[in-house]
Length: 264
Ligand SMILES: Nc1ncnc2c1ncn2[C@@H]1O[C@H](COP(=O)(O)OP(=O)(O)OP(=O)(O)O)[C@@H](O)[C@H]1O
Ligand SMILES: [Mg+2]
Image (cartoon, rainbow, N blue to C red; front, side, top):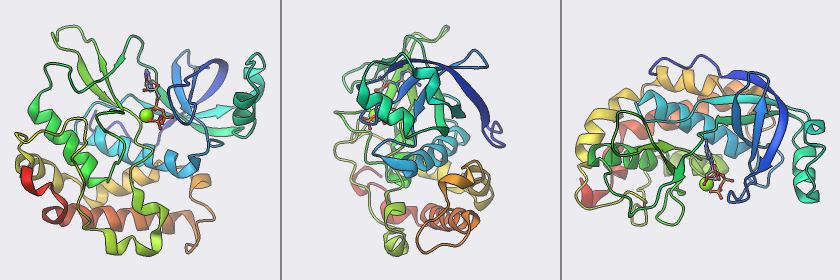
């Protein structure tokens, strides 16, 4: 898992199966030419392409830190594969999304995690909370966990899979003030896994030093140029990539400033 990334695989959608209306961005389940099924986040959604950038950067970081994230792929999407989809608002979304979109391996039989689910490993919970605090993910709450449980043979308890990182990296919506926010504390009170017993200091000691500029460069390299062009205040897509690397490398170094105080 650790070295899985060297650019994401690209697949082509051959069938639009169904919209997922529980998701605010109306992702779609899509079958691709590799016979895989993917949950596709569309560039034409109201959340926009920055949500997809955050999905890649945070999803791949999480994977490299040893957390479970379904494989991410780039999906070529031609709206004609969804000609049978009857809903006009879905058709509008799909027609606004021709070209490259983001797919996540579909986990058949997985269930949305709810905070009352038994058997969460506190060490894993602390790692996930650390990732969310580091990447300022405001969308892993008790009401919307963006965690899935998936039965795995050999494990009595279903294991946690991380999905939907589109609402993280909030600093990239205001690059002009991003540097000032680099040590911003994370509000963990309504986090899906928040609990006073978590050993955040141990998670920090384990993870912060692993977020190296080298790892960050590999992760941001996976973001397609097309999703980084025309960013106000920047020249080339690589200028934007460098800004993510600088910001996140700095934030990892100053973790003492944003770690949940009462929990460390
Ligand atoms: N890889 C997956 N495998 C199986 N089901 C999934 C997967 N990804 C998402 N889902 C299902 O689809 C729902 C919506 O997905 P997701 O949260 O990623 O969409 P979203 O549009 O970003 O949602 P929102 O912004 O409303 O949280 C999830 O709660 C889950 O039930
Ligand atoms: Mg979600």
